[in-house]
Length: 434
Image 1 (tube, helix red, strand yellow):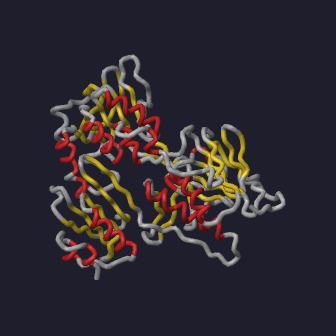
Image 2 (image 1 turned 30 degrees about the vertical axis):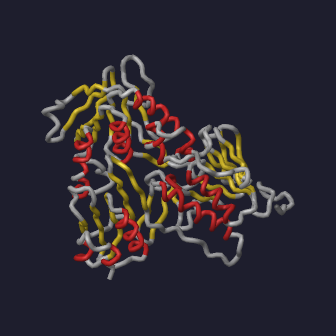
Image 3 (image 1 turned 45 degrees about the vertical axis):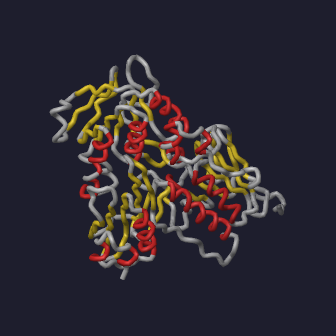
């Protein structure tokens, strides 16, 4: 490795990259840098003591105990990549003038900084995560490996469980809890599942998934508190008050709160690094933050999408995998005077496994002006397509992975869709492109 006569924090030709966050986005940034030919130093700083791991298995194999704890550990040889892995060190700030990442174990000098600290779960006011005590059920979150291990023992004991929130995490956890033999009640403040993610006309059939699995779903439910014996709540749902009058105490042996996540960026206060209104690092189309030689990637960063005409904040695994490749290409390419940059403008993608169904989504339907259905939403397999001025911009596929794969390619190329063909579930979606 060629030296740079000691100049800069890294002392090498390329300088030193410090990555704040050792989740998927942070790890993949380090891997992508080496793949792109970065010869300088790379330091990966993570708040947790565990070796970096993947999150999707936490709500599945790890939670149910069908695999050992190492099932989620990322298969990355940090030593062979010459990556300095520093775990159990929480980022506390950035001094952009002196180019220092501040941590609770001291400062890390950098030539280039990548912010990849992910997102933190939203906590339920008045019901902070607790251990059992004084007769009150323990309150849990599901974001980290330690969270999953604590919840695994809860499922093994087959306790009565109350889940607060019928979003993606709530549905996946309820699925696992029912599989483990627990009695499960889900309290949702909105009038339907996934209200914050999808329109009512799409999510309406999903309420039946809960019932069919033996899970009770209470909508219009406002949690008043967690107390001895269970969860007290009030329900405004049409079918709720008869069974659950206002102020009902719902018995619970444990409570799981799954009401969303927010970018983990509070530690950047006072750094001068610009945040968007949603609290994300306000990255540009090259995933650069507002401070010199600072990039941001993954759940903590939003970016402008020319494809969709708005800024996107994507809290899903695929974004944490794809974004680092852009960061690495831009960091390495910036060494060339003729490099113009690699723009990050993906088709967002995610999946969820819930109540025996494989649910996939691609794109962004916020600006769509038309919805097309493929298949019966009351059945086991169906798809919803969203168009904007005739162009496919998003789709949700339930049990139809081929629709998702073909539709994602159509979205990427901005294909205009024949509505009649798209509505025929027997016709391959790719054949609906004009």
